[in-house]
Amino acid sequence: ALHPLGDAFVSAFSSVLRTKTFYKQSVLGMSKSETSASFTHEEDDGCLDRRKALIKSMGGVAAISAASLSIISSNPGLALAEETKVQKILVAGATGQTGRRVLERLAAKSGITVVAGVRNVEKATASLSESSTVVRGAMIQKVGSVDTSAVTFAHLDVVKDSVDAIAQTLAGVDSLVIATGFIPGNPLKMNDEAHKVDNLGTVTLIDAAKKAGVKKVVMVSSILTNGREWGQAKSPGFVITNAFGNVLDEKIIAENYLRKSGLDYTIVRPGGLKAKPPTGALKISGEDTLNSGEISRDLVADVCVASLTDSKVSNKVLEIIEETEGGPKVFNGLNM
Image 1 (cartoon, rainbow, N blue to C red):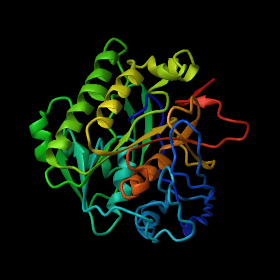
Image 2: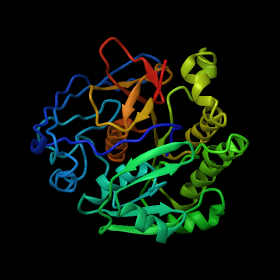
Image 3: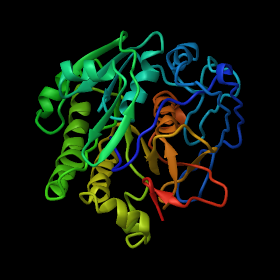
């Protein structure tokens, strides 16, 4: 799990669930000025039961692409404009609540090789294939099964593995999705764990990606990672989230390292991650503009997958939440 709190199940974007998608805006400039792209959708009851069939029917990728996101309305099979072709993608943190959703969408696509980067291959294979309710640190999470028949598993531990070892795992990989993150647990160990995973471990992964010749990196981070630099250090969202191991301070170091690495990157900064399906329109905003809001992990996964192939999000930072009537009132699952 990437954020301290929250989880979700897979979202639907096809006629099976009577999806309605509306393109609102496409903007290339993503600096400090806020931009947004939105879509709305409706879901039938029982969508969990049709989950795998739905993912298969839509080719595994919701029609979203971020920052100028080439949002495709009613034809999920339509090719993205100016898309970059990829052949082999590795998802680091594939058993996490965002990573497994990214993995699920990619595994349903044809013509690509999908690799799940996990610490323990045997345990990961079992956990992804079963639906369960699990306790992860301070969180209780409901997780659905993932069809991994088209997925290759590979050992990857960002804390214990060396740059050379991870580079070997990444050999032949075109694109990397970084969905790793420490799991809050023992308060006395959170600072150390966040530092090892969200800072040092991610830096190691970036170095390995560069050494292995990876061409594209999509990193899942968080809104307010750079909060200290734009006057948000005392905002409720920053204070509450950073209380978990100073995780925002650790993440911004890794973000900046990726930006200086020379790799083609897209950094996706979601608001508070939630378990429920999306209930509002997706809002995509510029860098350092959002200080509150929630979003379903489903939408985060959709944006990550689309960012792998849309050249318009090259070297961009995307902040994303769901639109809510009356404005956002929550961050990281905590009512304010």
